[in-house]
Length: 363
Image (cartoon, rainbow, N blue to C red; front, side):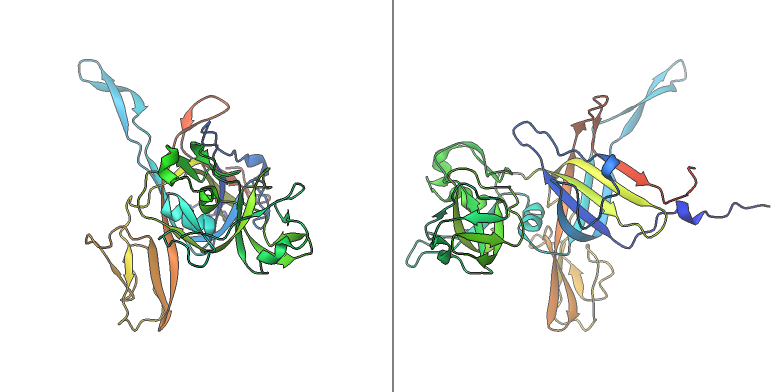
């Protein structure tokens, strides 16, 4: 009996998966397109406007769309198939923490805690802040021009948020990326700093010059718009609850070791933190060296699954490295929303691309 040998160049092997996200135009529900023609990009330099969110772990995806058949004839024999309602999900764990990673794991508005003014009103998402500093024309996503001496309000290493004042507008707010939806001006208590509280236009100051601030990374939402101001940020905070849902385009790339590269492109993902999540807690009495996983299984005593009402949908995993230290990761769960393919108008939720290794057989 003859057997066909495995052709190694046709067997995709990967060590890890990298996640990239890009904003969806919420007004028109237009996703960011990933063109597979550019699929072999350098993983450290994704094509714009894709944002690199680092390596992810415990990547899982589901396609639960049911299929049924049309039956005909006396015996009710299958004559044709059809698909039912589209249903697809993605789950994984962010290893790194940052503004965008937290927002995607949370799913609702993500808040910038603006540096407070002494004696101001306190609030769980940040109280009365110090006033903003006007950003002058000519500024870019990497350099903010403030004028002579104005940069002294910020120290190298500090975080800042850059956006316009809130002026009683309703609808989506946030420059470049929709950060929240205001249904009524009264809902945000006419806070002029509200847009900067939720904006994705944040950055880290690496140098203060005589007239400007230089940032370590470009602002997420792009160059400041006219009338924007900058305010110092001391922390990020998200909230479990609320009525706003984030929506992003996503690209997951399996780094090629052999057999070529595999990419999963989701035109529209909406965070859905409670879907299918079991959560986990850190067992402080554990003596194991390292826990890994996402649902309580395989933690060797380090983590315990929480199925009670107190922690079932927790979004963080605690993995003990060496007592008493713990690495905290962000568990993210998403619902895939349908999008029309530009070529034929078919409604789809995901595209899978494969880029064969050099000189690999076609089939």
